[in-house]
Amino acid sequence: RIAYVNGRYVRHADAVVHIEDRGYQFADGVYEVCEVAHGYIIDQTRHLDRLARSLSELRIDWPVSRRALEFIIREVVRRNRVTNGMVYLQISRGVAPREHAFPYPPTRPSLVVTAKRLDRAANEAKAEQGVRVITVPENRWERVDIKTVGLLPNVLAKQKAKEHGAAEAWFVDPDGTVKEGASTNAWIVTWEGKLVTRPADFGILRGVTRTTVMDVAARLGLEVEERPFTVEEAKSAREAFITAATTLVMPVIEIDDHPVANGEPGSIALALRREFFDIAE
Ligand code: PDD
Image (cartoon, rainbow, N blue to C red; front, side):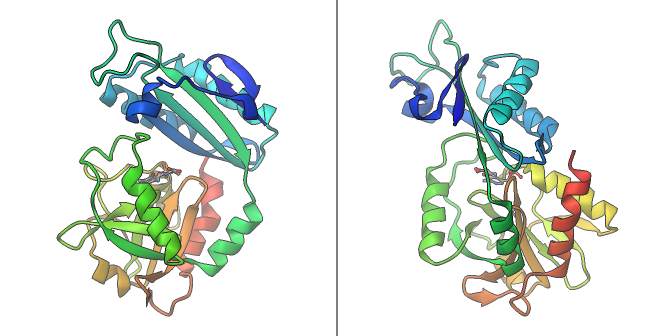
């Protein structure tokens, strides 16, 4: 495998960053995960738009131009012969002697890009089965709209889910409403067949898959309502599902050991999953 690190394509096993990289010391960096399908980067424009926003919110400069980054992504995918899989890219503020405030004069931001193949058949089998989720109290900072590598609450929540035999943990606010998963957005389908997902203006990440699923829903003639929903509403909903790059649309069959409807993957979630690839460029 080949990775891109700060201007070089190197063997994945030999790829290293400096011990005083601010991504390593302060989680002072941002990232993106993109789905690769049939050799194409799905929703690349939306991912890079969100990256631009994350960088600007943290006042980190682009390490290379957007055009150059697009080229590097394609090159990493090509060199790893990935037709179905994922691209991971991370940008940190760079390498500097450890001090909390931004380095001055500014350092060159660090850029790492990797790609790997994913087992699409295993993912499809999982979607046919559906997954379980657990709920955990929201304990993250307020700026989760920025896709930073500061993911410790997400790591702990996901580990807890795993120990419960669940695929995801939903962060829940004190008022009982669901924010999102540790690495996915959360959705339900009402008994009237409406899709419901939390507004992404504040307190969750605006998932690229979430946005594209809205396009897919429109194509299928499904109505989407952006509003908060509670854990209780989700448990008694017609369907629930989660969305993210690589996960795509994944039906949820159980929430905190409580089956969603009959405990089978929902037909609307599965229809959205099938339709997804036709609309994502
Ligand atoms: N996670 N919410 C959170 C907290 C996420 O970390 C992610 C993505 C999403 C879904 O966003 P998108 O549809 O753009 O992938 C929502 C990636 C996949 C990860 O951390 O691996």
